[in-house]
Length: 514
Image 1 (cartoon, helix red, strand yellow):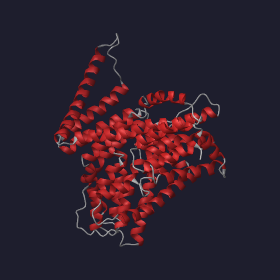
Image 2 (image 1 turned 90 degrees about the horizontal axis):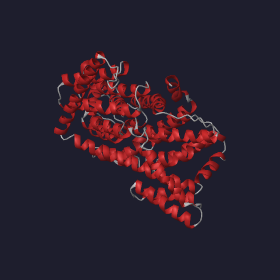
Image 3 (image 1 turned 120 degrees about the horizontal axis):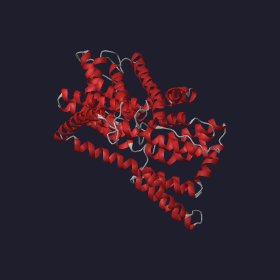
Image 4 (image 1 turned 30 degrees about the vertical axis):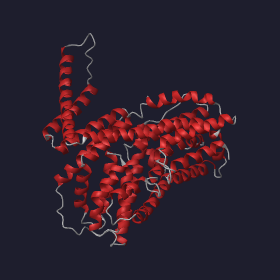
């Protein structure tokens, strides 16, 4: 077997043995670089480019948004906003047959757009919604499948860590494809374009889940009965109180990116600040202070954009200084509100765990990205890039056949590898070839994102399955969970097929906005 293919097989074997992913990637790359050098198949001087690659990752403006979005999600999860949403939605839809399942899917979509953290969403719903569904007579397999699948929506509905990493990979692949075609005035792909492209496909998946849950409840009433427990229907004010804060945060973050008002990093900072304010409100900070601070920050953002002040200029007049004073007062009020929220979070022992979780997740992601740069460098040096291109171009069916093969490969790898590993190791090898064959890069990115989302559900190493196994009541078995997610994996494949047959679902919105 050629060294490049042996290298890839060794990587999968090392990960399956349970070694830490980042160390496995770096170790396999180092070992095969030395083996290739000894056999005369690899030039060690190529590793000189590694420092430049690391520097490029650490200074990447797109990737800077990752820790802020992770912090936003962790803060929202630890402030128990998910519990309020689930309770309110369950009371709202509980009287409907299949209503509890509908509420879990809708809450999963809202949490996906506001937190984007799969583990937190699955665990929260597994501890809160799953026991309620079982008490009301839901089939354990259906209940488990709904909770697992609704939790994975955080990977496809923006803002999503997966979409940010995917943007960086696809943008580089798109530039490589343009260079290969002799286009030296290269275009790039922005996070805003990918977010816009993923929005409608994410809602399409939500619609598929809802149709399945309601259809199964209608065909097999015993699987998803109406809520047997007597609960009071929530008032409009209660629904608004539970739903409005996350919706406003979603609008602020996505609106800033899609509207071109802020970069991904700036929008992530808006999201992190908004999450801290929401947490402060939930933890008991004065509602008046939260409203005043939020309005001050919004007014400052709008006013500074419409009428910016540059006091360092020599021609700054009294009006400029007065406006600068007003802006400073608004900034101080906003900062005081955020400081009060952080102090309350610290007093409730919430801030330190949130910071620790943020650092842990961020370190894992960046360690994988950095070591994947070394892996791809060695793999390319061993001739792997040419081999991948030869395999794809030889596929029967031309570009469509190559796309189907790659999607099937990603789907199968999702049984064993994490989405980060697939994104930063496999996609840089296949994406440039697929784009050169004529596939739209934005549509291709969304199609791959839906495929990678499925990896959270596919046994034996689907992360959602592990998360739910740890949070589920004792009466839920591993067999229930595996059987429950199987129909939803089928729905994911249906969603991918619909996107493949109707690319306009993912290309229409970015075409309008950009």
